[in-house]
Image (tube, rainbow, N blue to C red):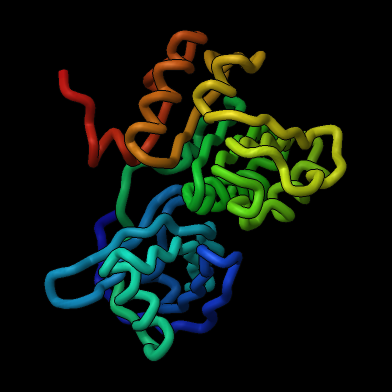
Length: 246
């Protein structure tokens, strides 16, 4: 699927927490087609395009959802926030990325995300629940502190309402308040790679998708490889834009 450049309408901008905002865009349905796990690029000016994972799977209605971390000290982030406050239209390019859901596979899924990397896993989860509703999903979402799990209620809802979904909240700091109640909802304190190392998991049987910084992704890959993960069934955008040196 080759990338296309088009203009979209901004239909909603909402604060998901104090640092993350959600953006909903709509364009021609056929032009907005993408695979779960892919990303798009927003145009800031003639030379600046900023990538964001698409947080919604393609329902054929031309709608896409983004989760954007706001960094006031970073020029592009501040410019984008200002642009979204005044613009009713944005130019974007999509789809991008090869880290997309393998719809032919029936292996259980292990989805590992840090911060707004959850947006990529949200799209994959929604697609699987729609198309392969019995496929097992183990979602691990890591953040520094509890409030950074900006859609914790949604992740908990998946685990509460789907017997094949489990949600593992991972925070470096203690929880500020209890998680939602559910037998498939759990909390782990620590850094995500350390938590995975201590966990009783069998990644060798899973398709694994990881979204986060290169350091986080490769730390997780090392742990999972030690636990038997098949590297050809481990997927991340990081492998394309920040490959390890041989």
